[in-house]
Amino acid sequence: FVYEKSDEMQVPVRVQLVGRPSDEDRPLNISVSSKNARVDVDYTLPDVAVLPAGESYTDYVVTLRRTPDLKSAPKMVELEIHENEYFTLPVRQMVQVADTVSTLVYRIYFSDMFIKAPEAWDGNLLGKFTQQKFELICGVLEVDPEDFNDHSRMTLARQVFISTEMTRYVKQQVEK
Image (tube, rainbow, N blue to C red):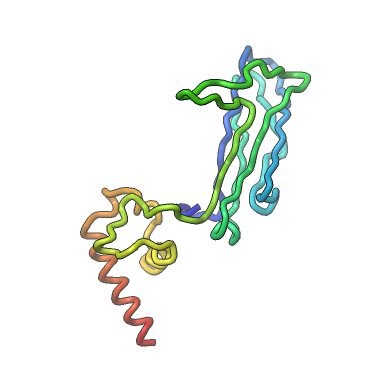
């Protein structure tokens, strides 16, 4: 969530059919679990999981929510698809770059913490990166957090401006 303005984020999880589409909607059997994320608090799920008639795939959209807990620890939601009367699961694993992965389990990791500075953060102009400093800059100067991942939007001139304005802001706060 560190680059998101919104307090919700939708994550589409693609469910792909192996076989032919049907003329009728078919329900999917998807279980969702987590050791540290709570349904309807940290995330919400669609009311139904269905492969629509005539389609060979669908997106099961998980909506993640920004909560205060995400500032101190990452969360994880695990989705697993199971067989039902409409579907068997003939492909259970696949090899990707010398690693065998499950085709039936999908994990979503999410947090509101930085693990490193954004791509376009210039430490010479803005100083050592901290999440607190980053959030203050974005809040005070109304900078889109995503701009810090794009050198074309976070130009040298813009970072000089940010440095100057934040120095002025901090000075004003100290005087108060």
